[in-house]
Image (cartoon, rainbow, N blue to C red; front, side):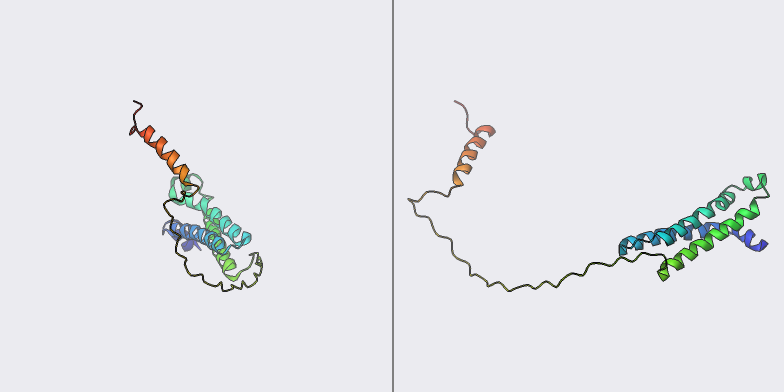
Amino acid sequence: MAGLLVNWYLGGLAYVAFAIGVLICFGIYYDANRKQLPTPTPLTVAIIGVIAMLPSLTLVLSPSMQLGNPTLVEPLGYLGILGALVTLAALILYATGWGTVVVQQETRERIVVKEVPVREPQPEPTRLVDERAPAAAWLVWKAGSRAAWRSGRISSR
């Protein structure tokens, strides 16, 4: 077991385990949101595993803390290894579906689309010279004269 702790602290196993643990947490979160499944148990277990790795990771990042408390080096190393195993267990829990809440989706009735008869396009009626313009034409005429006044095309002289 001493070789495992040496690899954990000096071999970089703590960095790899922490990175994999964080990726597992984000993977469970992303996949659960994509599938719209509430997964409280596997995600919580994975986060607890990553948090359990943090004390031993701080000992890896600052070796001077190992010299100050030599009695804590071994228990914190085992705590980090346990956190890595818990995070892997959370991945297995999520992959098997244990701890996920299955929500039954409503069944939708089949929509029947009726065929609508196609109307042939009708040509627009032509206006005769004596006919008045459509009802909305006076809006364009009024706005047009005001717009020309404001833009300076028509002077007040």
